[in-house]
Length: 200
Image (cartoon, rainbow, N blue to C red; front, side, top):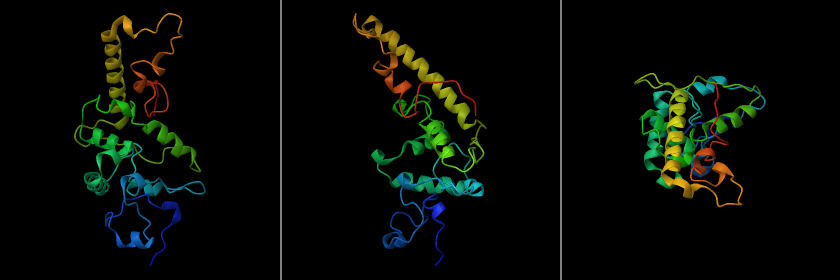
C-alpha cells in the first residue's frame, strides 16, 4: 500500500465516496465530504503542479472536468445545511445563477479571504494556479464576482431608499453605518471586510 503524502492530505475528494472502505480503517488520504477538502500543506515546499487537477476546494482556480464531476457527486448527496460556502460559490459561478443569490455569503462568498489565508500559509506568497474562466462564455471568476458586488451594492442602496427615514438611527445614537444597518450582511458577510476595489 502506498502511504499518502501528508502534505496532500484531503486535497481531493475520494472517488469511492463517503462509504470508502479505507476511510473506515483510517488509511484513506482523500476527503469524504465537501467540508473536509483542504489545500496542500505548502509551508516547506510548493506543490504547484497539484493545483492543476488535484485540489478540489475552490479558491477561484480553473478546474478539470473530472474534479467538477467529483464535486457535483458530493454536492448531490450533501444536506443543504452542510454545503460549504466555497461549493455554493462554484455552483453559482458555473451555472450562471442570479447575481444576488445568497447575499448572506458576502459579495465574494469569502473566496478573497480564503485565498489570502491560503497564500500566507505557503512557502511562496503567490497564487499557484490559473483563474477559472467559464467555457460557455469566457467570463472569469473575478469578473463575475465584481458584477455580483455591484448588483448587491445596488440592491442594498434600494433597500435603504425603500426603508426611508425610519432607517436612520434615533437622535443621540451614533450612526455605525453598515455594521448594524439593513445591509450588514453586505459589508461583513463572509468576505472579511467591506466592499472594496481590488485587482487580481
